[in-house]
Amino acid sequence: EAQVTQNPRYLITVTGKKLTVTCSQNMNHEYMSWYRQDPGLGLRQIYYSMNVEVTDKGDVPEGYKVSRKEKRNFPLILESPSPNQTSLYFCASSLSRPGGSYEQYFGPGTRLTVT
Amino acid sequence: SQQGEEDPQALSIQEGENATMNCSYKTSINNLQWYRQNSGRGLVHLILIRSNEREKHSGRLRVTLDTSKKSSSLLITASRAADTASYFCATDAEGDFGNEKLTFGTGTRLTIIP
Image (cartoon, rainbow over all chains, first blue to last red):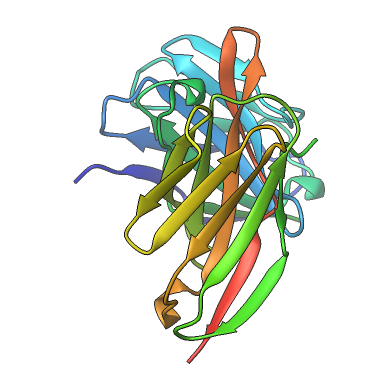
């Protein structure tokens, strides 16, 4: 089954404790992306990757890191989480970049709480 | 900043009625997409319309695009309880190497009353 998986689905952590949210897709997609969703703000793009070893900042990259060492995986790293990073996070992938008219496939989401 | 803004923020209608929601955006685009999100879950792609298209249909969905007004509308006909969800428009936005960003609006929360 074609899908995007994220782990963990729920995470409660404390300020400053490094964490990684994994994302994996099995569709051989080139483009992968991370979003955060907050009430009243919709989805905001954090980072995206056009292909292996090619990543770039979205609209809200501060406090996050990503890497793309393999085509299927795109982990999101919070080196020193803070309470303002409490949010619902989504990973997504598509065949290629949005400007080429490709739909995004979304993971189920990771609900992160930083205390 | 938000590229897309949906209107209204919330909409409640009786089952069987039609639902219309609108999206406005700010810069030139290659395409506009609509997604649905059931409460707290991942988004699901509904329909994509390219900048050179004016209208597109998919089942009970009808999307229009007016690039001169930088706006789009999503019409859901003969609504069902299962259509209760949030609906988001998304537009491609320019990055360093072309339109590789995707920007979402704030969404319209649709409630279908049985």
